[in-house]
Image (cartoon, rainbow, N blue to C red; front, top):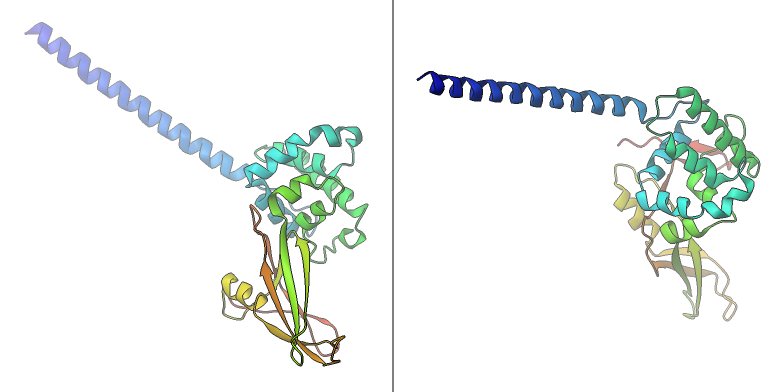
Length: 243
């Protein structure tokens, strides 16, 4: 009887301690997840929320980060200013608690971009896409393999039917916002056949239709939604579209 009681007590004690241990592990996991959640962002160093949001989107693409690391031998020669190195360093500190380190790297990244593109200087980002700037860098394999695609544009004369086709490479699509619509609606408008004024070199007709088609698809399709439009005076006007 004593041995049975001791065995039952041992089992109860074992299950009790196991339960406490599991609860402790669960609480530790919750605590770690909260900590990770609070340090994944980047500080705003002065009207850089657009840049930070673009960085977060880029860093969520694991294959993009892996391609940057593969090109390390290419950008080692110019460590202080190379754009790909800036991105690699920022990604390494994404989960860091050091605000100062992140701010230093963000400033270095912004200086690197500004050195080649003046419209990104100061706090006037002008809606510049950081991903597009990366694509214009001499080392383009990372961009080509992940974001580049081919677009076929065909212009047809509405008078004689003569067709002129041109294939171009892109790394993003810049589409108009559709009031009350979705991204799919904006893409549908972008690829909709439209009429333009263009003189035909055969019959001298003045109107043509333009149709655009995707010839290839990228791993990741980047879509830039235009937040501004030109008014009758040629000035930029911000669009106010409800989500």
